[in-house]
Amino acid sequence: MKDTPTRALRALAALAGLFLAASASAATVTFTSTYVIPAGSTYNGNGNTIKASGMGDGGQGEGQKPFFRLNANSTLRNVKLSAPGVDGCHFYGNGTMNEVTWQDVGEDQFTVKSGGNCWVSGASAVNASDKFGQANAATSVTLYYHTQTNGLKNIRQLGGSTFTCNFYYDNNRAATTKEAIGRTDASSTRFGYRAMTVTNFTGSNGWWYGRSSQAFTY
Ligand code: DGU
Ligand code: CA
Ligand code: CA
Image (cartoon, rainbow, N blue to C red):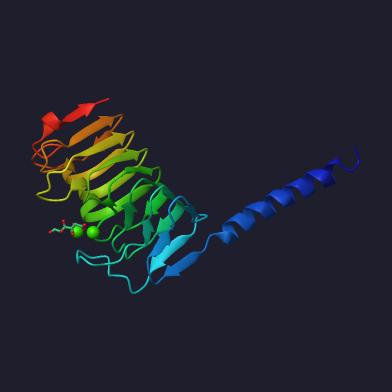
């Protein structure tokens, strides 16, 4: 009985220590080149913030470098990407970006460079002057419990391309989209969506940029 308060205090102190250790470990890490996540492995950012230096200015110039290249079957998780947003992150085959926060999207948020089953889940991205996601190869992309705020297009399939993509929006939020939730020029591409919250949409051609017949709920 006598030592109960001491034990309680010790437990509290231990908890506080854990909390402090956890916050102290979140750091800002500077990248001067793209980090390649090897096939089949995971990069866990442990809540750190990445800052790109000498990789692009985050404007609309093409040829900027991505923060991360995800080789096939790799995962990027628990990381914040600060301005300048450079060329976002690139998928090469299947991949997952989980709890990745884009604090200020640069040229674009993520790009599918070669196709696969690609997932962007949790967390959020803000301020895409043009596109959030860009698909440059036939792929399946799922946005899952992910929020995108303020941009022209939430997903854009490479302009003029006719390969087939399947885009899924599952429990997402799109706030202040000014052109399209999904835009494609390919007649075989499909957009599936469920539990999607869209607010302040101002595109003049509908969510699917004139291709509503290619969209379905599931
Ligand atoms: O002319 O190729 O925006 O991957 C168009 C360009 C453009 C790509 C794409 C990307 O489609 O650069 O960032
Ligand atoms: Ca581009
Ligand atoms: Ca790009």
